[in-house]
Amino acid sequence: MARHGRRFSLAASAAAGALAAWAAGPAAAHDAQRVKYVASVHVAAAPEKVWALIGHFHDMSWDRLVASSRGPGGDTPESATRTVVLKSGAVLPDEALERYEPQKFTYATFLPHVDVRVLPVTNYSSTLVVLPQPDGGSVVEWRSAFYRGYPNFGPPPGLNEAAAIKAVAAMTQPALDGLKAELERAIPTN
Image 1 (cartoon, rainbow, N blue to C red):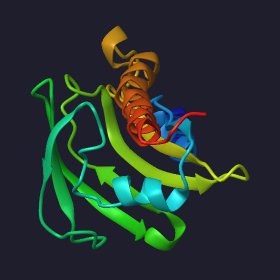
Image 2 (cartoon, rainbow, N blue to C red):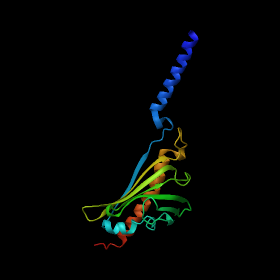
Image 3 (cartoon, helix red, strand yellow):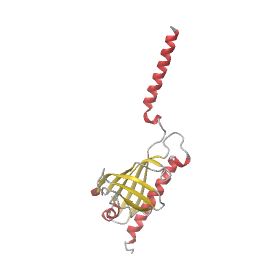
């Protein structure tokens, strides 16, 4: 009888452990949290002028870090993809256009495959949006969402949240600063 009671206790303990793991959900698998980062810049140009420069998915000529960008699908969500080659020689392949809304001056992308030596993130998605301002200018936001490069417990220093945020900032803010300089170069000063 004592033996039967012991088996019941082990079975109950195992069931309780399984229930606890199930209740913890995906958080039990890793401790990485989705990070959101927004780079932005105010540009003394109307939203239509800004969108004319940045509003085509395959045209990354406005981004000072990009050597080339090409791929099929034009500006059609779910069929357009691009491969971006950075001036450093790094490649960001298979970035997909998820949403394209030119009337709202915005598009969203997803980069499913990232070499963490190039960009120490996983599941990178971004939204580029041009926001009209009362002064007639625009604010351009590059909204990024991602997980750090090492999603499991105890990431190495180069693949933790701090490294991921630093890398995304180094990719997005210089692009926006270059966009501002390019658009405002043509504006006469008083």
